[in-house]
Length: 301
Length: 239
Image 1 (cartoon, chains in turn purple, brown):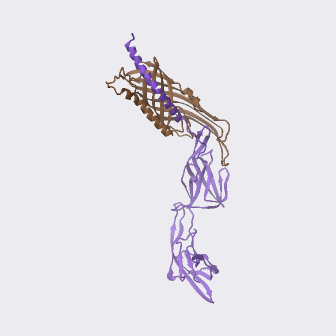
Image 2 (cartoon, rainbow over the protein chains, first blue to last red; image 1 turned 90 degrees about the vertical axis):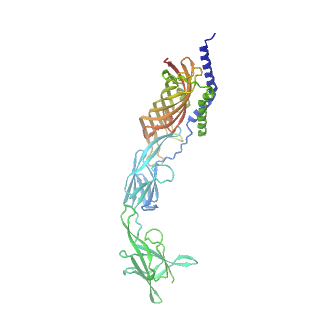
Image 3 (tube, rainbow over the protein chains, first blue to last red; image 1 turned 60 degrees about the vertical axis):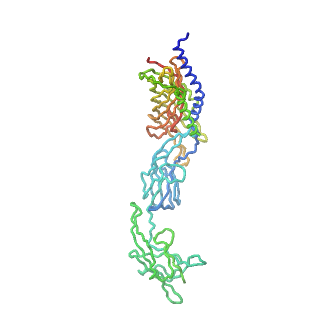
């Protein structure tokens, strides 16, 4: 007769083995899925990592304004010519893959500015099919001779994102008022041309002589807050004179701490009580070199 | 698709662990017999690790051993293993330039497993016998890597540059959640498998060469991985 103890052991283990067998199919299925998930996903060799930085030029100021460099050449530290006498708003600067800094030189006439880029390098194995690539991270600017730089994105990736902005202290202020004679033609405003024998200011400075004026510039008096201009012409043998009187304010302006102070003329107004032109309009109150004229005079001649 | 499969696995694993309770839990539950003295030592080696080079490109060799100390229904577990990877492309093709990339290292895992299989006759869940377990591991891998390749200059400014990187004393750690069985097939000889979910991977240092192969973990590009091992054990009972 069998030993009941060994019989009990056999029954227990047989049940265990049955438990295992019942689940073995489930386990095999689970294992298959586990292996499937454990397999590496497909990789493609296309990568966002690039070995160049995109740099944009901006003007210093409270608002972001694009700047343009004219006739500028750009070289890398190994004398590779990247740009030659180009007009640039943005540049692509390829960094040295064998170093952690690269110098670039911007040559405009007799002036050369330097931009040194610093970065970290990671070697990344993409996949057995694609091999290695380098990733450039932690972009910084250890040195520059430009007025100011700003890091916008410290990872070098493909696309149009700007990595670095170079900000310059651009003085757009001027001491002249831009003006023009206009007239209405079929409801549209067109430039007019008026001949004057002489145009001079209240200091006696002759600005124009025997000139046909359409768009022109009038210098302000830097020592005063008002300037008066006299437009003399001959009509039927008689001398006739028109007067334009303008008021303005003079400010000292500093775009940024690293920029020099500059004089700004603003709040331009026409004093119509001492202006003989029938219709005048102030279009822009700030005297600057940017687009747009300050004053339009409707000619009624 | 991967998320769906992962969810399916987690649900099935939970079912697998709960099933014995569903079967055996319906009966009356007298107080379980407990014994917190050292019961047995099980030592085993992985059968699947040496076969993995057949399945995984780049893996040259892998070996692993495990030991567990049974105390009541718990097992104190320690794994050690080693792996060696070698990847190479000899000639340039449309996708990549030639390279050589070797990694080798060792790893260990320590943790605790809990047995859920009940000996109905003896009213115990001693882990020294057949087990259906779930557990957690802390794992650490120490390895070295060597990479040689040419960096091609697409913009034609700096020229192609040869790169040779060698890094010793790289390390990574992660957490593993495991589940499996160990079944005595003949006296003191066990067969068993373990399913692992490796997660919370961290590299212990930042280097210029980002590890692609991590011994014991798998692909360094991934943050979590499922794994599977099949073991043969020998039990040394203490009583």
